[in-house]
Amino acid sequence: MSRDLLELVLPRLARRLNRHLRRFRAGQMSEAQFSRKFEGLLQQQYTWLANQGIPELQAAVAVHAAVVILSGPGLEAEAVELGLPLEVVEFRAIQAAAVDLAENYGVRVQRAAARLSAIVARYLD
Image (cartoon, rainbow, N blue to C red; front, side, top):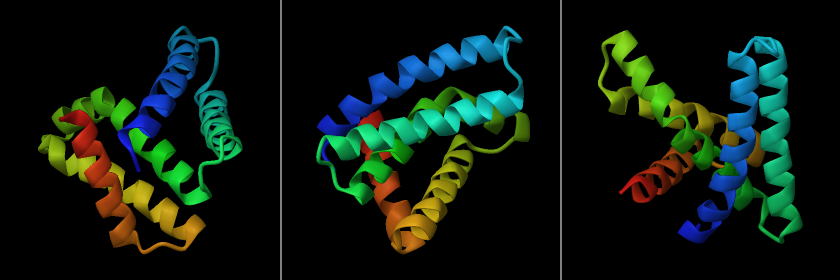
């Protein structure tokens, strides 16, 4: 997957996610509502990519990678809270995304995790 695809997904996802987070933090939506909105937002991004002609698996990998990247500040806070190295918490997030990809797209968890790790590392460099 090219960095260009992530460059398309990240701003689209970040803008909408930021809007939902502001409403959640202001008490304008519950945690359940936020979760539903977030799931819908991810589905919208996936559908948009599919409509752009991006293969299903590639679109799903891009959306999952974008979520991990955008979750960086939350992952950092979680690492501090748990007293763990950031890399451990990031790996857990990537592993969870890889399991989802494996269950929904028939790829091996290890292959999906390796792909996500490579994308996240390349993007953050």
